[in-house]
Length: 172
Image 1: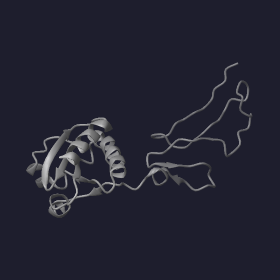
Image 2 (image 1 turned 45 degrees about the vertical axis):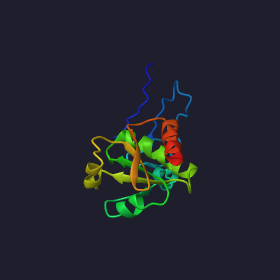
Image 3 (image 1 turned 30 degrees about the vertical axis):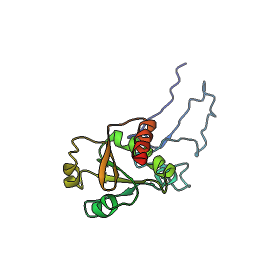
Image 4 (image 1 turned 90 degrees about the vertical axis):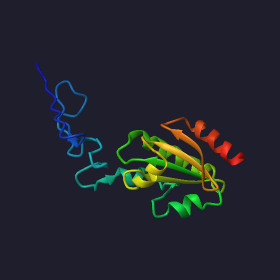
C-alpha cells in the first residue's frame, strides 16, 4: 500500500503545514490544526501558529554594537584628535568577511574599554577617507595613536592577531 506524505515547501524557508500519512506515520491520522514545521522566513521572522503573532528574530538576536560609526565629517575629531589609541575597521555593507571582523571589533571594544576607542567606517559611503589611507580591499583595520597610523591589518584574522597589534600600539 503506497503512502504519500505531502510536504510542499513554499518560497525560501517559510511556514509549512504537514499532512502526515495515517497508515505508516507516527503522527495522528488527523493532524492538529496547530501542527506546523517551523522555519525562519526570508524576513527573519518565525511564526508559531495562525493565532500567534510572528516573532522578529533579528530583534531577539541583535545586540548593541560597541564600535561607533565614524564618517568623513567626524574623522578628524574622533580619530586624528583622540587622546587614546583608536582602532578603525574599514568595511563595506556587501562584504561577508567584514561581518566576522565586526564581531571581533565589538568584543575588543568591550575588552579594551577606556584604553582604546573602536570605530567602523563604511568605505562605500566615505570613499575619500579610504582613498587617503590607500584602502584597496575590505576588511582593513587600522590602529592610530596620536593621530598617526601605527598598525594595519588586512583581511580577516584571528582575535589574537588584533590583540597583539593593539598591545604593540599601547606599548609604543
